[in-house]
Length: 318
Image (cartoon, rainbow, N blue to C red; front, side, top):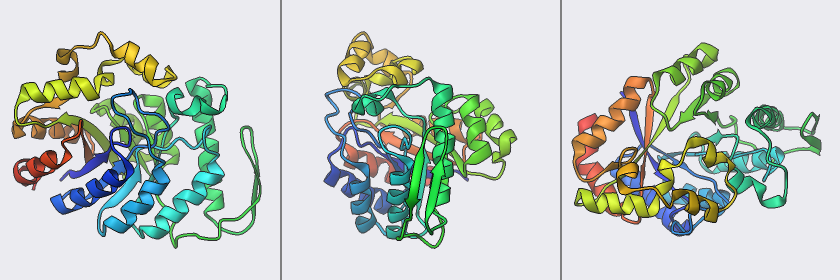
């Protein structure tokens, strides 16, 4: 049975609202959530990008059962992996047994801000692998040092450590990332419901590891209203994948999204109030081999979405 979760979109919501929505997700029957980590939103209309670690602290106090992961954090350029190690250890202490660390190779949109060169994907994957070595080294406690190809850590010790380190999941949309996740991570995160991706993950060592899939929807009382909202708030869904990691500013994403139509957006976002369409999309992920699916509701009407899923979707999955 697939477990259903909720996507906390930091690009669309203020920090106090994210904490409130996490509480509502728990109350509505979702078992877990993932929260995005951005420095910028994709486009100006979204309007937010709070510091994710502060928000996680708030969520730890507004929920009791909800598992929470970053979806996802880049521990390689904008923030040094030694700092991510400390932040994740604190989050795991504040949410015993229910915090996990989702990691990825990042987007130029967020990582360019310090003027650091944006490397190609093969280099970013090397950096991610070394970053994970540092995370796990520092989570062992005691004084630790690391001198590697990309990072140096000197006499660092994390004093506030959980009894058990948080699981590390890696985001992937292609076979190379999926194989990396299978080899060195504790699970996979993806937005693509493809069985070949899961196969690559499993054959690389991920057979008994969890697989998280993110699906994007826009619930509204009428389908045409949902399509308009989806185009207004999330036109980037129709931008080709490579651009999503390479463009540097919200203005560039807005320019790339300008020709995107409602029809194009609706091809990748489930729009409207028909529960069968939402269940059908969840089943696509389940049939591809995902055992966790978390749902991103586009736009400001999160409370309507929670009522709809609690009443019309979750009962169909039990």
